[in-house]
Image (cartoon, rainbow, N blue to C red; front, side, top):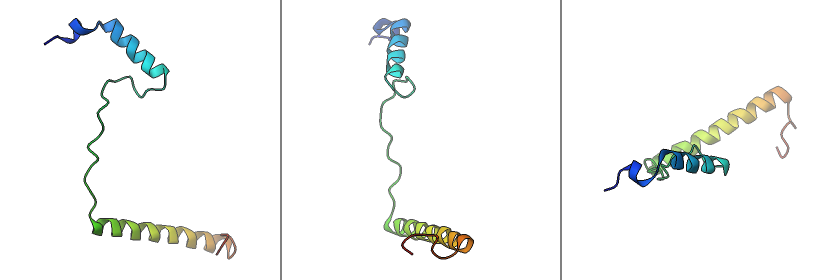
Length: 76
């Protein structure tokens, strides 16, 4: 098996990294494997996350209504 130095010189590797960065690449690294995606959510976790999200939204809405009065949020 070829070593890295037999395959490409350091200068060539730097040129490729620089070109990738010029074109809007991430960090010039060559690790392009996708992440594993993390653990999957169970139905109970999804339901709890949705409930917490709704609760947070209601808290924000109530804070705006308390501060600015009725009519501060269109459609309410």
